[in-house]
Image (cartoon, rainbow, N blue to C red; front, side, top):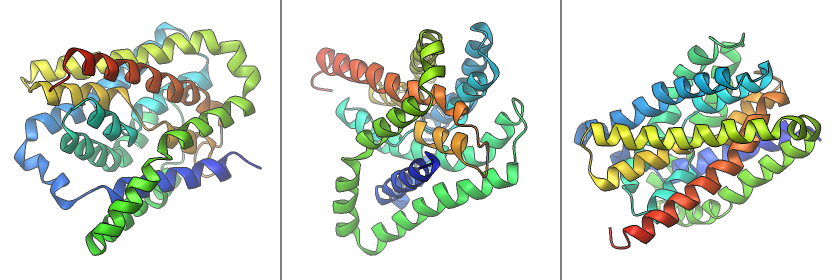
Length: 276
């Protein structure tokens, strides 16, 4: 069975789950607290791709790994960041808003930024993102509006499987690309871990420069450190976009390392700030 037949449905379910957790008020944050939201979006959409490009160039990644690393950085924030933010006692409303806005904005910015690295069918990319990202989010939001209690229960149920589903996708691509991953794992380990750590540092630094409060800074650290690895895998393997499973290799390593690093960060935050 082709890996794309597994990764694409999982991505759609994760985006549907994101929609189930969204309220109209989540989008009004741009008017209530524009500085925090815009700072996070600038970190995700501008700084993180720049960091990925510098890392890929510095480490001399071969073409498919170079493109794969850029693909991760150009994707939106991952929905699991909302859970991590809650555990770290960050600003969950800001986290959800950043995930939602970045999911919509990167539908425009991703083709532009990735087009600088590799030729790609922009029309197919936009159509696939509409079907796999935007429509599931809208359906989830509609269900929440019509049946809020049902949507909340469904959201809680699906969210339990978000992390296992992402790890399953990573394991799947590990199996499919075992030889290449074995050959380049040490290099990818350092590159991907550096991307996660520098993304987190970028989020914290931007938060301090923008004079955000502790909870908002904590949220930006997590949001910019956790990208949507499932979407990167789906775009890489999709026969309508890249049709290059090799592009998903960095995302498989990233899916593992972002969770390991962010779990350590969350544990550290809870230990030094147990009450706030």
